[in-house]
Length: 78
Image (cartoon, rainbow, N blue to C red; front, side, top):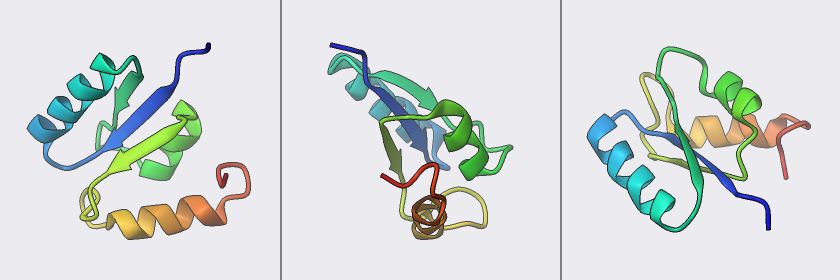
C-alpha cells in the first residue's frame, strides 16, 4: 500500500512536532508548514492526503479560512 502523506499547519512549532511524531508512528510521511509561504501554495506543492491544522491557523489567517480556500480550489478539493 502506498505511503500516505500528512501536512501540518500550526503556529506552535513544538505542538506541530509532537503531532508529526505521532503521525509518523502510525506510518505516515509528514511535512510541516514553514510558515513563511502561503499555506495554500504549500498544500499545492506537498499534495498531502490529509492536512492537520489549528483552527487558529498561522499568522493572520485562520484555519477555517485556509480550509475554505482549499475547498474553493478545484485542483485540491476532494
